[in-house]
Image 1 (tube, rainbow, N blue to C red):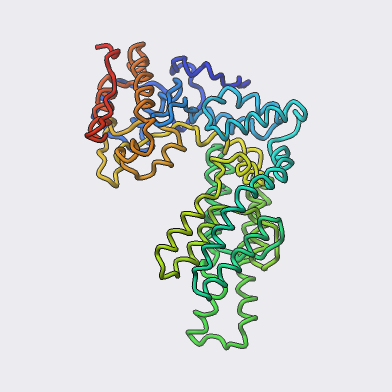
Image 2: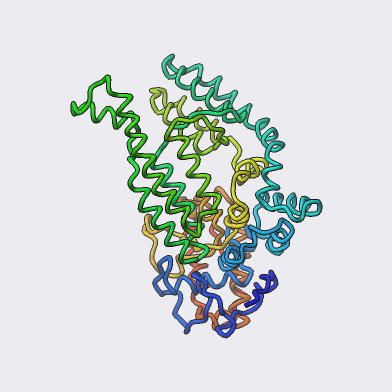
Length: 464
């Protein structure tokens, strides 16, 4: 069957059951009318899919006002391997969603479009890999003053912690300048990265690939979660080994870890995922870590802050702790800095690069009051926001959200105006949504907003 490219203008067209051939996990088929202001909803059930189905109709993010990408559009890209093809084809398919992207990702797409004029047949992976050295230099000019501030602040640390911090910064500098370093193997980190890879594989919906990744996840449970030093100390405490046998004990420990990886590698190499770049890179990196072989690693902001916290958590001076963390979080992220995105994504597969460009702009269900804060399980407690906005808000209360992002006052009205248009033209009725959802949602936002500056949404254009 020939699949036609997804057209941005199709966001405006009603989706009918007759032409919904694709089995999207998010669900966009029509349903009987529901009393949507009172119906119960949880993440993957049909009632939630009724609300998600609105994303096919150019719904603006309630926080940023940018139109969101429907989840089924990204699924279609993955199924058709659009991101894995030529740069020209990837850019062509991404361009209709350009206005949905956050400012950094929008700039990245513009850079890729210019690159496609000269090298249309190259892949996303090849182009970003070529760009990385230039952007690594640019990124260092932003990072270095922050590192310098941390080094200056570290002078207030006790001597023993200062030495530990200095060794950590020396190790960090090696990473920044592409020098080989030894990184300890962590089963938890491996399992986390494997799970992240599994999420992308499962989104493609190919049964044989899903079966393989399930086997790999099961086998990863055979890794010891304790480090070699922890394992040795435990055995020594139980008088199972003698101190002089430490090197032999650690050698056997590494062999057991390597055997688990060998079994996983055997499964991978005889599976449909044998050419998966993310998995192959993870396995190669893991082998180097198990045997303590120096390797070049890209600097990772999240890992740096995590390791820094482990060092400064030993400080008795809580003010210095706070000061150093506040300095470290100023390091640029891939969501706010073009060079940070390019450097981070340079080692990704083309498919993952494309996914990273679009995922944050994908529409998702937003819990106005999270369940952890006593949020009711009714549809009026749910809105639509991009994955990035949803994640950025976290567990912050809506009142706090309005204070931190006052633009929400304006953008929530844009969101409600679009819902009103869809109700008035009959789309709500066809999709099983009632007028009550709009009213309940507006009432909920009003109650959650600050008393001194309430969020009052104009519903005057809503037809009876």
